[in-house]
Image 1 (cartoon, rainbow, N blue to C red):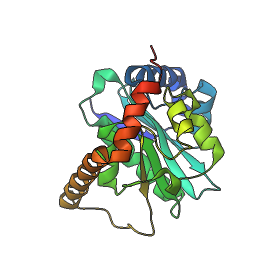
Image 2: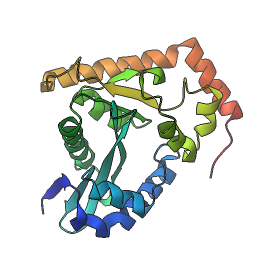
Image 3: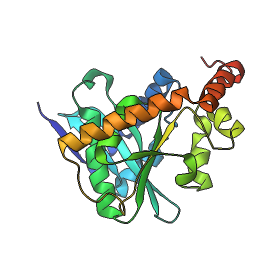
Image 4: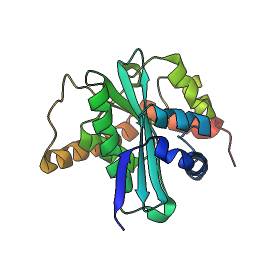
Length: 221
């Protein structure tokens, strides 16, 4: 049975509970990242046409939603999840591509951004045209950053005054990159991004940050 990726609507309300459970399970498994969400929040995103759902028949395959910040000047694709039973099938990539298209369609002048610890997500983002940036280049909307409070590493973000964390900030600026990249360009972008990550790990300040992190950050079950 083929995978179906579409903008979620009222017809998908019945999946809200399962989506929230999958978001929570994913966050626990990774130990970082995705904030918990209530069914009411997910239902609201579906009703607004701001969510992407992936289905394999009647089975929930994955989900993602979009949020706007700073008066629609920034857009984030958030809450990306994939059913563990269906991983390795390119579900995340297809959902991200659809969410990217929806974001560009609804907010063509907005900057698209995200913060993530997942290298797989970083790869997809880089191929879509996102570039690594400092947190200062992302939205400064306090509500967005408050959403990080449910992440186990929120204390790290607070201690560094939102300058650094385990997440990597990524940004797509429509004014600078309007053209869809060819496969060769996508590969080049990812190679450059990997080089950036490797260089960052070798920087004295980053090494010191990681060292202090493991000395001070409490262990979470």
